[in-house]
Length: 519
Image (cartoon, rainbow, N blue to C red; front, side, top):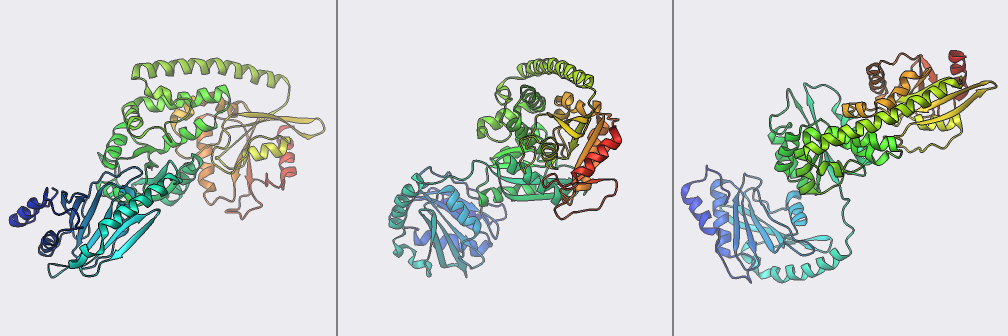
């Protein structure tokens, strides 16, 4: 029994007597028991909830605050859980809340009943139960007559309908996520960050069902987010039937474990999500190796949390890709795998260096296309080179580096290299693993910095790309290419070329700019 300390001793004794008590199984609720919990609610102002099985046994008694009681029930599979919940409302209103209906559906309860308490007596009540994919609500009016509505028979009938419905049920998407952002010292734009995280989640095939944010001076020592927000997340998980929490912040392994244990669902952070997307995008041997190395490096300090999450919640987002099986190994083997993948990438880097030298011998200038993810780099390369590199309006649509020959005019040809897109807070494991690929920007004769000028956040996207180039110590001259000018533009810049890679507008101006700078 769960009961607040504030309740008087004699009332606690009454509640303790209820737990384990049994009444006639043909009754929905014993009238004396109903009067008892209504009296206790009237005396204390607290909600009282009973969990009752089909034999009339009271399995659990819970006392909550003035608006809720914490109820723990294990749901069934293609059948009902075999228990009903009857709880009082001290407000005097018998309306069933969204939380009540959500608990009924998610836990597949036999029924959910709310009893309005007035003058310490049961006044009226409403009962909800499932019929197929719908919820039926019965208004019992006078609570004294609740047993005259034949509710027990109706529950058995509705369970038959539910079994039939369940056999043809299209299940919910495997991953239903709530996004969480903790803004430390009020830095950054929470709304923009969560919008980008939502696009990342959708790219990974995750359905976003809700978002939550919090300003904090420093992270909570246990959960990173405040303990009060953890309670709010529990409610949201129940309401939305969510099975995944994605933090925009980078979490340590202990934080992942603490949050996951508190919420009972899988927890990943932004970096894990990005690496998961990379795992689905890598096509070449080098790309797969780079992703696997990044996953292994990221998982090493979080190995315990990974193993726990994998064991309790299965695979899915954050556990996919070439590196997924390696996460099941112990730390020593993971370290060994990191060393091996690093050596394999070094061999491929030598081959890449050789290819680069051969390209330089051809006397064709080399141009690297860089920019924020989904800025239109691959579309621009396709238009200029008349090629068919994979293009899609999503984050990190292409991951592997592509090189194409581009004719500008007679006697003037260049080699263009499309590099992987950048993003805010890119995991440093990614930078390390993809260092050989990113080096293409260092050795290029010219860089085309592609910017989605229609994006309201384009200035922060420019800053992110510039920061990555600075970290790479890139000295190559840069041409700013403001793409998607056919759309409504979010800004007006005068230090570059405006183009629409989709329609071809401005590409002649871009070619001339390249000729002026390289020839």
